[in-house]
Length: 356
Image (tube, rainbow, N blue to C red; front, side, top):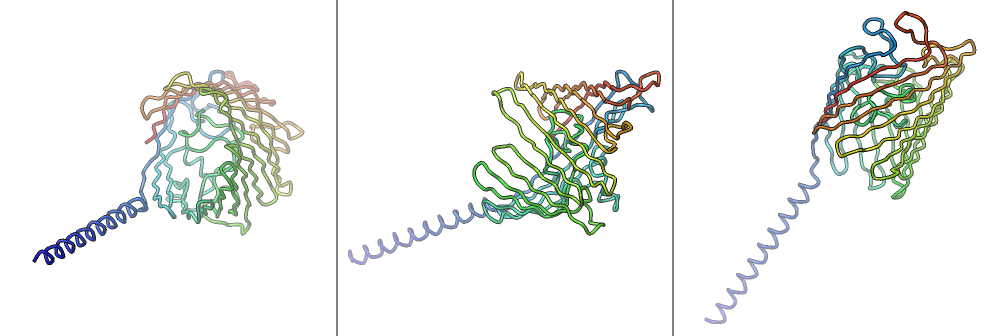
């Protein structure tokens, strides 16, 4: 009887061990499935602002710098930005929609389907082929330049000339390669610049980006034109950051497109956990009647030097940005309060940006 009892006891122990092992495997599988299951996220922003000229008319006759966004007089709307993303370990997508004047200005070259195309800021799917290679297919914001469309990611609320006259978005296929911990490479084939809904020309643009430790050298070749762009920045201390952007664009002379070159610096100082102050100093020069400054001389050349001083106060998820901007052009492209042509424009902006 004792031998039989021991045998039953051993069998029971073995059966219990099998149950525990099986349960452990099931739990581990469930945790692995939970970790690898794609996650849906929802984010975005809302922004509005007040703008006034200090040395020029406001209201119907109001002028603004020749750069994009924040150009409307009085109390004005920016945009509502709604971003839905489904992120998996291997694949996912991003649907980035914009509503409002800033969003419309950002996707100006998508006019075919006004009820749909004019609200799509980005719309792409991606595949993480490996830890070092990612393929992205669809419509994505440009890889050139220091600034972006969303006011959340920019320190200054108004935008630079370099950003305004570079590309905004592309539609195509790009491949990102993590070459090492410091080096990265991106290669892309895309529709002509800013033609994001479809390709009406049958021609294509080519892009490349080489990155090293947060510094990026960018190249865009597009139907006889090309742009070379450097974007980067340095943490000079725990509270002081210096951003840099330089670009040269050579337009297609056969199409009557001019050229431009520019340099912008972005010193930013954090005075506390909730307040920072930053300056954007930019020199932008055009040739061959490019037309960005607002007027050109007899030789087709014009330039502008713009200084923008911005404060950034954070209150929870809300950022308040007071901004003083001075634009000084080589030509008399603005008018004063008496209607006389002048070469400079000073303006004030107070913006509110809420992100979620």
